[in-house]
Length: 320
Image 1 (cartoon, rainbow, N blue to C red):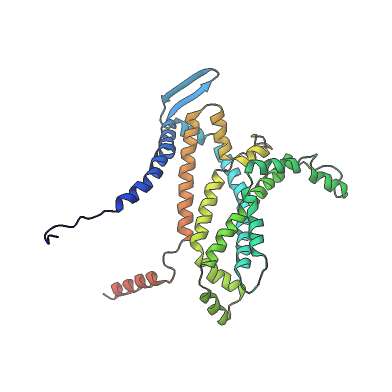
Image 2: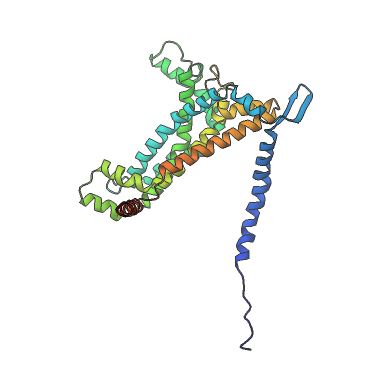
């Protein structure tokens, strides 16, 4: 072998790009192009009137202005209320269950069984869940039959005919479908905390609540941020449960009509311009909410070292 001969260098980095190439191709075709097309259509008048198709005619921001004058804010309020009804009990119960199952001192038996049971509702399709609740809580359903048989009520309760009943059912379904998934994620986050920290806190005399609020919650903050962000996105996309439960009408009096149901009504009427502009609004709102949630729930200075360094720097400046 000649000393001056350069060794052939093998570059393995290209294989990484080759392996991730199918993802980027699929993303470009099925996500990026439809997203760009949606934004483009939002600036056009494009709808169908009877058998006549109008447009596409460029109208600028007219679709966005029309939406601001519509019932969009009312439906946004409905979406927020329905999300809160389902999410608040979901995160509270998921945190409690995750803390219980992970706590070695409680010595809970059959943990794997309970994990499977609480996760099972997540495997049921939302449409099947909504049809089940629609049947159970109808005026002639089994819930009213049981209550009447025990003599607790004299007349069947119209659960789906009241604002409180309909919203409560939608929130209950969203809670049952997702609290198991949230519990499993939070359990994984708590199990990632070093047991030495909990042992040290116990030696120092920390109680259960102190350990939960001052150790567990701060250390699982990244997973909590992820849970909140995905929940916000899912809440803004809430469609199938209220759509099936109210037959697409948002009854009673459109108090359970969500933003995606409103968007779907534009798609059914072939008004692609308004649907596109509403999609852009949803994209902007979800981005802002997710950014705010991320900033609130994430702490890039958990030990306070950065804050201490900034304070020392300010003191040095003041002395000078």
